[in-house]
Length: 283
Image 1 (tube, rainbow, N blue to C red):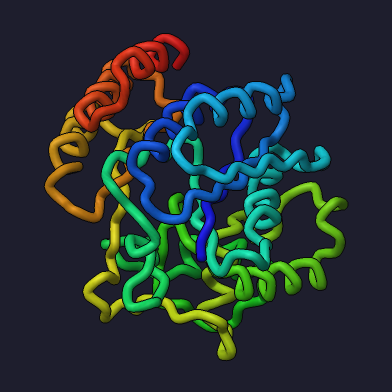
Image 2 (image 1 turned 180 degrees about the vertical axis):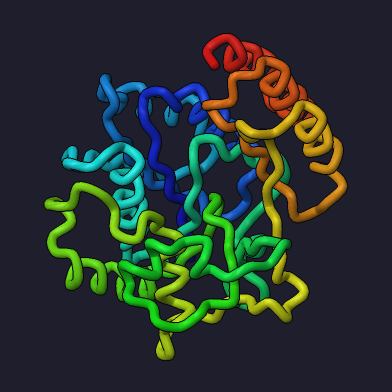
């Protein structure tokens, strides 16, 4: 059985609210979600609790975790928290989301597994993981080339037992996580994937590059460095591909026209117009 995992913080609460509404409408897998937060200037615990109670209304089990603040930046801290939320022996797998991941088509665990093998977002342009994530290579002492470049974008799925092996490895190499000032490897997902890829006794199977699902791409959306034309192409293509089920809206995108595209996509997929208009104002 799987659960959903998300870590958020104060500035992302408008995104988080939309994410919750989308999950409530479209997620058809196990409706168990674990939520934690990092602290920027304001502790968002009460706001998060209110939002989940308001929007997760149909058979959800909701867990809130209040972790101790670390010496890491929020970016590094949230990586640790995603792992801690996922090290839950009650669940075989965790599906990790960000607040900007808006699910807009019906989905369940089968979207993340093919014949019990975990799907991976790979770069269609190819490449070598060692070149894309050199810190992963250095921190994990990787001495061989991983000819399999991946994207470190949510959503992703990881396995509890395999994640535990990776986490134990990090703790043995880098010490108690409460003493860290940054996250080893720089990317929790690329590190987990590399460790798993090279593990000859791994607990799971991964979809290989030869599989028809090798270039699974569950996302579309807007990014900071896109042109307006590129965002419009994302909108046009979103419903052309059945596996593109999450529309990503990056909070740091300042172009108002890009946000209007996201609002249009949300409304086209049945998300409440008043909620979307309110998000546009807040965002």
